[in-house]
Length: 502
Image 1 (cartoon, rainbow, N blue to C red):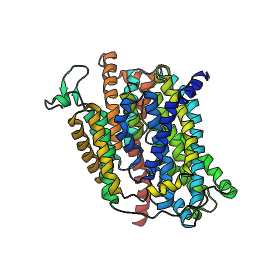
Image 2: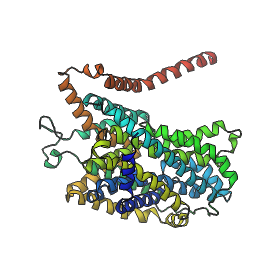
Image 3: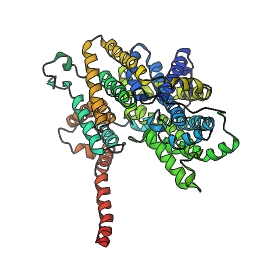
Image 4: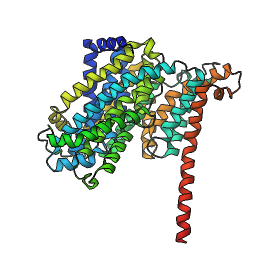
């Protein structure tokens, strides 16, 4: 393996400007993780307009820092307030808050910081080794393979993710529909434009992302937490004892592995990884009743796993151009804004971006470890700010950001429209993630599919005759029918029970 590109990546990261943006990213990420409800997805969406005036490497380094930095920050509210700052920190509440009630909040935060650092670092090493191999393999991809991969990505995030599967598929369908608005790139015909010149150019990614993730989250959280003030638990010594580290080391190791693997899979991500790591530790424990009452492993495992997953989810994005989750879909859009197409060609055409982003995570994780423990006191003060005070400021920043992209009031109305749509989706149990992912992948799926049909002379069977696209489409069929198979198995297992009871 040629290590010269990796070393060049470090030289890119160590440039003062990129170091500064890495620091800015992880600090913003930690702050956002501390503020319950907003999350890295909403923050990245709100900050997308700012990336126009920043170089590609600096912009993506900053946004990546926000993503994995938020995993650190979400731990603080879970431990001190029993209120997850991030969805991936939900499981940490069980034992983290129990430790805080025992006067061990510092221990919980210290273990979480160490586990997060180790999990993130292990995952970065895996990313460094695995990403070039995947990218090299993907160089054989053509339009049929990209079309099949796009369909698989949308289906996986819809069917494997959290929540109601039917609602997720409906949301993905709406995203694909919105992606068709505008002029057809092949024929020039206008689609769903209603004779509007603004819609003829299509719907831009930034208003969609800022509305569905930024404005909708603010509206939803105002309703959920308006004027609620929580009293954080007191924090003592944040350095864990040798006994605590001894109990946590196995959980940290297993959490790193689980997080790395599940983070790569579409629909997996940090939330699923933290749940899986916690469940594994509880199942293998000699005294499972300790969990939920202040088990150190119950904090170490999920916090390690969610940071490992946050890092490894960059593998499918950078190498295949397939976002593994909703936040990665926003990162995908950020790269496109910079004129960079994520995928197999990224490592050869933009090695500074590819290796700069990966290597910035080493620096970012060290910065987070250094800052996470000493800055706990600052974060506790931030937690006392009412949501009703922060929300108007955030809304104003969001709308101003939308306007500055192209200096059009039309974009502001789009953000408001998608914000209301996102709010209603959350109220009725529809997650916006599948919609945004489908919206991002829709043009790639359509263009690749139509190019493929031109190659095959209009015969769709060509997709199945090519080895890679045929294999991917077989996976699509398998993922589609798997829920039906599970239902059939459950019915069969339930029938004998019903016969015995009757």
